[in-house]
Amino acid sequence: MKMNEGVEWAMHSCVNLSWLPGEAVTAKRLAAFYDLPTAYLNKQLQALTRAGILSSVSGPKGGFQLARDPRNITLLDIVVAIDGPDDAFRCTQILKAGPGADPHVDYRKTCVVSQAMRAAELTYRRELAGTTIADIAGRVEKQFPATPDSTRARFANLKS
Image (tube, rainbow, N blue to C red):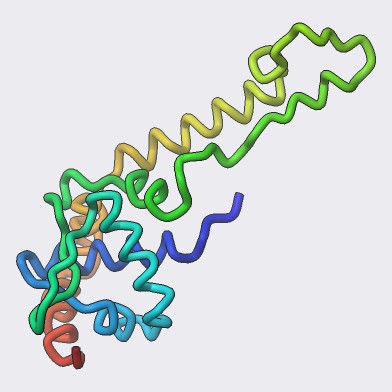
């Protein structure tokens, strides 16, 4: 499975925004933090806004900020906002074209390959749903205690 690179960008942006509560940060500044293309990152930020993960503030002090507490934003929320809700594996029921196929059977439910892939998908989604932006930020802070302060300082020095 290959995720859109925008998922990674969106997750890092949300972690950074969690260290800037109440501050709206422009797409340009968020992109400059990691030297990303502003227009492409902005598309990801707009998707997060449509999903209710970010809010967009207009005006001279405008930009993006978290719309919810980081404890209430899961990694799955971000993946779904960027990549959509569809499962990574989609059973096309190729067994219907195989020898001894029964046209009345829903092979998405009876196929062992489909069952295994669905189980893996559920495990993957459960793990993402059980991890929040606050969890990630907390793990970063534990491993690299200076990161929140250095992130705030770097954003303070980035041009709008």
